[in-house]
Image (tube, rainbow, N blue to C red; front, top):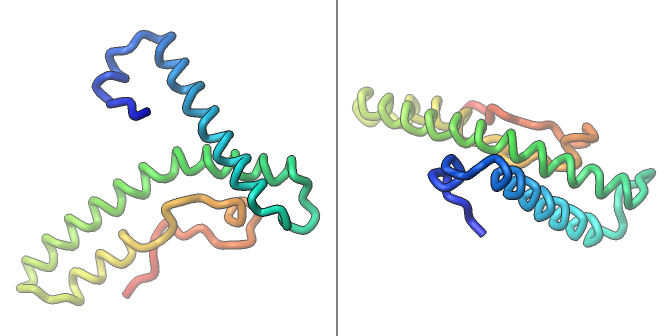
Length: 125
């Protein structure tokens, strides 16, 4: 079920709350099913801890992904303009594209536990 932004803005408060609640149920279901798929789990974590980490990583990604996507999109456009203004110099474009486009787009439980670094800004070329 996809809710268009235009439809979401025109909804009443009860429908907005219901849509948000429904979205949270879907995220929770996906998180729980993905945590159960990794039956080995992380050492020292109970299945409930695993499910909690999956749920929190899903919620965090809901906030993080749009910000990272906007940053990457702006970087892609600015890099394209810089590339064009430099006469097609790939180094100029790549110096803007690499940090903005590369990096993590999804927050995983490993990011939350500190086992993997979260890179908002990708490595420079």
